[in-house]
Length: 420
Image (cartoon, rainbow, N blue to C red; front, top):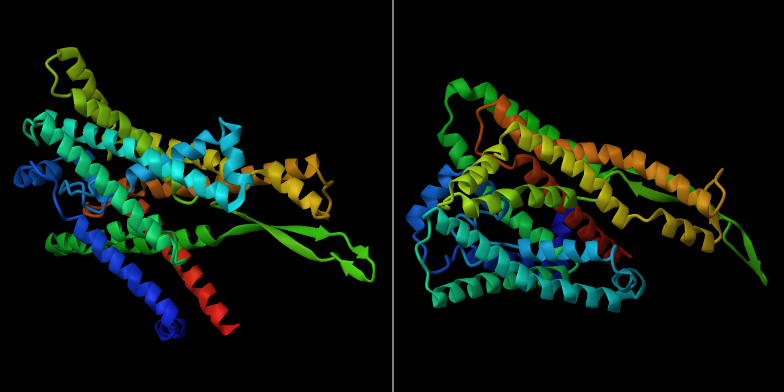
């Protein structure tokens, strides 16, 4: 509480917080402005009766269910960032730009991600609206109306991307993550109201079970997010003239969850893509194509068993994949050797890299299984209780808690600077 009060006593930090709150107000305002040519009453009925699109809407903070100008939220920008990071594994020039050219290289790399956001927003918006049109949620649109709607959707995504970067510049957490958090938190009052409205004495133990599970998940997310394996590193003493350098012992932190929430976003995007494509062909006049599309949608029902199995498996696989991108044992081993350091009992060079790789696989397994459990937790909750309003509870809690921890750390660091 003392630190919380200090935030508002320091003018510079207080102004940053007020600026970010103002940006969030703008974001929520934009998220409630609908695009033109949409029958809102028919749209609400469709989302209320469709589990798949209801899940998509929950992940965008409800802006998708209203078909607002920000209906895609930050999805295209996140997809563009993921694609660019994957491209670094294919094109060495991009990897060198991102990892070895410093701040200028990263700025140029990020600019490519921004440019890629525009075509991805156009494709995503067009595909989603065509899917709704096939299901009679949106009427026939002329070429001019299509151009208007797609332009508005692109502008909304780019505008949110800009708002996220404005927040990032204030050094109080990542702007994209904070906007995602705001979208999730914005739904909590509505979900809580629905849960209280449906409450009856017979559901007391179901609600109690849900509350206990929520507290356990929050505690688990904090524990796994903060957990790390400390690897001791010693540095040899070096004498230069009359000065002695090195001779100290430190440690290399290896986080259990190096990948954050990115594996869940990867897996969710991959699982929702077949259902989205199948939605294009459900209303087609070709009988066999329509049957195949319907079968795909049925097989990948978000609360079904096979969906949960595939979701868990993909999250585990993508956790290892994303960790391999962010944590390179060979590069770390080389850096330690250049600085005259070594891990006790391990020879410098390839042996250190092999040791780090072996340890990374073991540590990542814990984080991967944990993320997989968090991902399928909503289905477990719905099958064990009758509480269905908190449809994306596990993923939502993971994002909210992780972002909150990041914001707390950055604010704490800025308060420490004032003390020094």
